[in-house]
Length: 603
Image 1 (cartoon, helix red, strand yellow):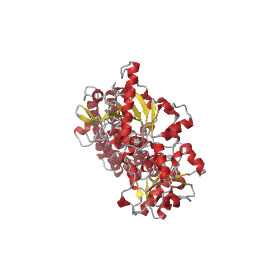
Image 2 (cartoon, one colour):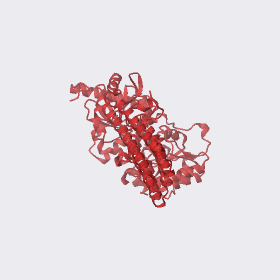
Image 3 (cartoon, helix red, strand yellow):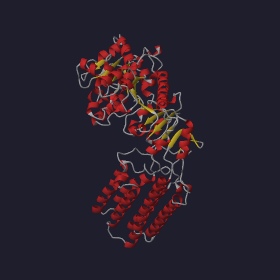
């Protein structure tokens, strides 16, 4: 299989359609060209506009993976052909405005070459997009044997790369160098050469477009057709359990927390993603994965063998799976906490709602949002199987290790439990001043909504870089948080699932109270804080929290009771979860039998 990444949209080789031109840097570089032209016109200096065009040309010529932008550039007509036209047009105007005025014939030839490159770029992209529409290669897969390949499909082969090390789009960017060189020669007064370069550029552009047309038009290379083979491979796998996941790229972490659990399932299991962007974070997973971008594709990879579907996120696209008759559906979430999102009324659409312990059931009962309490099942937190109850004796004599793991500011103010902006820096300074080691593990989305949180996060990271001596950042990897749990003596966190998970260790913890609610009111609203030291914005209780954690630990007994309330009776959490999955499959079988409807029948 090709080594090229398959996590973007369906595309051509290393540059493809659907991911090309998605970087705001392109907009900035084109703006630089325009600024260069505005400076060149009054000064009469062609050098300025040529220099301004070079960065944009170099970006298109050397393009590699870039950070996705907030919007696609093609939506504002700034894809490769348009960028090329702006660059070359600006240089032409800049050169033409440089006295003395040069012969028109040279300019005319170079203008024809510019249009030829522009049309070739447009044709190349259009032909590639049309070929993708003709193919049946929507389904991506990994860890699944499809015609002998465990991963695929390969990117659409670039026809130019059969003959040259460059793909067609990069080669067309290289052709622009001839045009720019011709314009420079016009200014320098070199006769004939500009026309030769213009003709050469136009011929090369036409040849590249012709190669693409021959390969991608009807009668050329046969279209890829792997979807049917993927469907056959999924049917042969006969999965009984599906982990279904849909989310923006920023939400991938909600699936990675389940990765080891998914790989430990006893029954045949399939992971169904709706967006390919999540694949990069799942390279260590061994369970078969398919990406089904459309509703039709989703139905293809949901064979009659599927009995249960588990949902780590609550998003609109979950409806597209729930509408498929046959399987039973359960919301399992990606964390258990006192946040409002942990007991959403939207969960009424699932057959069952799986929660960690009795505390979550009581949350649903307290808000009375119309959820039938009979569909709630306490299944524990299988991710916590590797959390240690105590640190090894060899580590006990070391300095106090504090884990500061705050949440993010949420999508709206009601869901903002974060301490980062209000008190994060002062928490870190207070811990360091007390002589303790501090490990910082911010939520991946910290600073996503509020600039103040982003600023505070950066300040904390800089502070820890200067502190050294064991203090620092916890990596943003799937197992890093749980490893940090095992290394820490005490946790400082906000209201979030981090508290619930940390209580599996039964170690001391402190909870921030950034709105300075009265202690009794705060603990009543957020039962997970019941055995914690509460930290108001004045941080008056921080020294006591650190002292108790490293000494008498007066809340040990209350933590034991609270942990059982939040997580259930102590037992192997992974075995408990797998037993629950087995029981869920049995309930699905019973429902199918009672309805006398064969599994997988589609009305």
